[in-house]
Image (tube, rainbow, N blue to C red):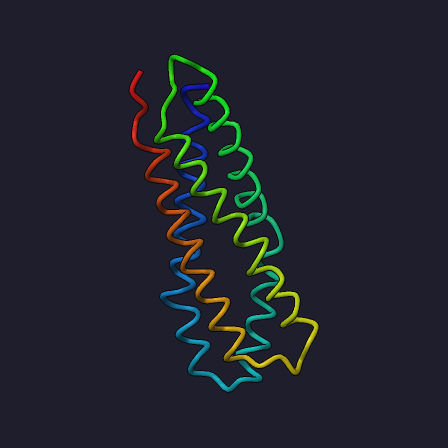
Length: 148
């Protein structure tokens, strides 16, 4: 699996990371300028839209590709690329952060109209910046050619 799999994992990681970067750079600043009720309703709508293909295919497919790439890089002596393992681990750490922090925050925002927007958006933004950095770093590690 030295050909297409790490490329797919790297491109997926870069695309997911780009999505997160765009959210931090464009969407969150725009939401901060809106009234709290409007920002909350918009964020809930965005979160609902994100939980569909194509983002879910990209998000979970990249995680699977990263897992397979890391295993392949660790087990195949012809590849044994620590960069591929590190890139895969970086994306997967961002993926885990999404599942552990962003998704529960999104669920609470959708369920609890009394949730304070400022506290939510600060916590969510911090976690988003981290997962963006991890995903972009993952792409870099995965797309640098492995040395045989």
